[in-house]
Image (cartoon, rainbow, N blue to C red):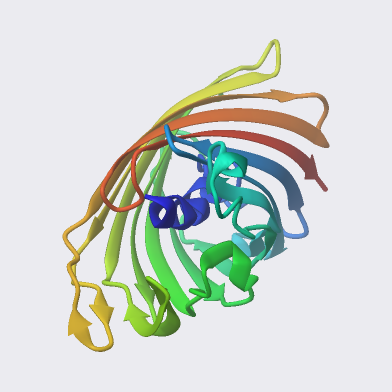
Length: 269
């Protein structure tokens, strides 16, 4: 289960897509910085990390981003100080993701909006954070957004993730690991109370392995799946500053059962 919590770190950072990537791309030369704290826990383990994400619209409807650059404060068993071996060395910096999104349709109410997204996972994490497993990989997705009114917006995404083979340790032995291709399907509904500058949302995410993992070139299982339920709210202090809070409940054998609390302070420019 400890491995599952480590793997859940990447999922936890993404939190709700109200944080970064699932609304219309917008006009040229607009940008946003998200300062995030993420706490993940279950009955046995807990993780605290502080990721940073930045996005910028180079031209109308085209966005570039740096995502999930951050620091893991800990990722360890609860009450590990009472264990004979003590607490593991699990703090350090996490890798970043380089992303791009292009919106195909103009932004206007009552008209479907489609966008394409590509993320590239750059292997830069400290070995203490992920037991040496830090693969290079890609994620590609198609997004559908519907603006029903000034207050109500729906967003969704269907994507596929592919990670390359990477060396790591399994039970203290050096192995070559390659994860199976994974599908992601997400949906979220947001409602804004414009008079008080508050937005609330509910969302769901489903992840499923399509092909088997491999260890040293041999099949090693790969039928895992995960489902996450999310609720959140944000308050916009001004056109430049916003605070968001998000809770997620995750269940499955892909990342393990766990809960997540995110707080995000956003600066728009």
